[in-house]
Each structure stands twice: as C-alpha cells, then as structure tokens.
Length: 293
Image (cartoon, one colour):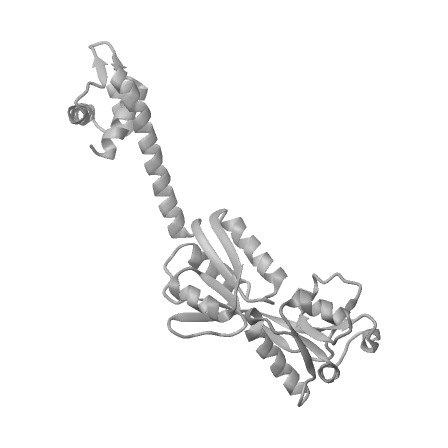
C-alpha cells in the first residue's frame, strides 16, 4: 500500500464516481481503477459496491475512509513540519545569555524573531559564558549572548551590539547633584560591582575601563547580581556602573542614574554559536540577530 492508493481511494470515496475522481486527480480512469483493485486486494476487503449506474462505499470502505483521511492529514502535517523546520518556521530554539546582557535589546530581538517564527518553541536561560560554551558543544544550547568573543573548538562569535556605561549613585550622594559625572570621579569612589559568575566576562570589560581612568579603582564589594548591586548602592555602600540599556528599567527612589561625561566606556555583546549550524530555526535566529547589529 502506498500513499497514492489512499489519495486515490479518498477521491473516489468523496466523488462516488470514478471518472470525476480521475479528473480530480488529473489521471486516466483505467490506472485509477487498477489502483483501487490493488488496494482492495492488499486489504482483503471490498471497499466499493459498483454497478453500471452507481458507486457506493461498503461498510468496510466507510471505516477505511476515516482512517485514510487521518493518515493523509498526518502525512501532510509531517511534510509541513519538516519544511517549516528547514526554513526556520518550526522546531525549537534554546538561547543562553550572560547576566547583565542588555535586557531591552534582547527582548526586542526575541519579539522580532517570535513574530516571524510563531511555531518555534523558544526557551531562554541565564548562564555563565563557560556554561554556554559547554552547552553549545553538547547541543543543549543553540546560541548564546555573552560579553567575550569566544572562538574555539568550532564556536563562533559575532558582535551584535554595544552599550554605553552609565553611573548608578545613591540618591543622597554629592555627585547625584550633577547632570553627568566623570569616569575618574566614579573610579575613586567606593565601588560595588557585579561579581556573579554569570557576568564575569562583562566585568572584565568594565574593570578595564576603570583601570584606564584610575590606577587603582576602589572596589569595595561585588554583588551576585544587579538587584543586589542596586540595593547596596541605594544603601550607600558605594557607586556602580551598569549598561545604559539596563538602566532604563531601574525605578527606585534610593538610586539615581547619571551618564558618563565625554566618551563613556562601551561594552560589547557577542552572539556565540556553533559554526556548523545547518538551515533551520537556529540559522534564522542568527540571521535576525546579525540584522540588528
């Protein structure tokens, strides 16, 4: 039994007329009749009662019609799913990101991708850079966002965007009265930086900028994440630096955001992925991510 036998059978069953069914299928009537006879022989049952005046389904034919329609529908769905996966419209996508990756930028990118690939099962997870690299190698992650250009063992890295740094100050701090602050002023104050493992690569970029402004930045504490960092700054333990795009979401009365005067440090974010990716949801996501860079 082949799928064409099922297609031929359904056409005859719906038309209840061999000539009309053959015209619908764009074939001659004789090969259609042979195919139905072959199908009946294969099944060992009679599917149609035929006379010179009419054609009607037998009881077995009525049951088989329901099953045949189901099989053809399942095959069509499987074909569409396979084609959708190949073009990136179906499948699953697992994205990792380091702590501190620009939240609004990532959210905008994911929204754009989701609008284009509504049937892709998208999952995102926060993890450190090295964990992302391991997950890419094992296949449990499809792509990731980090602050370091990892290019080793088949992993590729593309720069996708840069973000200026802004200062976060306690609202009662003297520098909070200024509309913008110098980086060297910030570097000399007690500093609370993020010390969580997930944002280690970003911290390296930040601390390189601080070292360029001051020989010995006064780092007094390292918070596990940005929420803890803001709480410590608000309590007056020190000042801090965050990405400008992440500062857009800060709504607290105990801290203020101030731009860095002159040319603020820029933190670059990279998209990391396996270099051997084949067409599908991952390739489509990479294309979309590169388009925003």
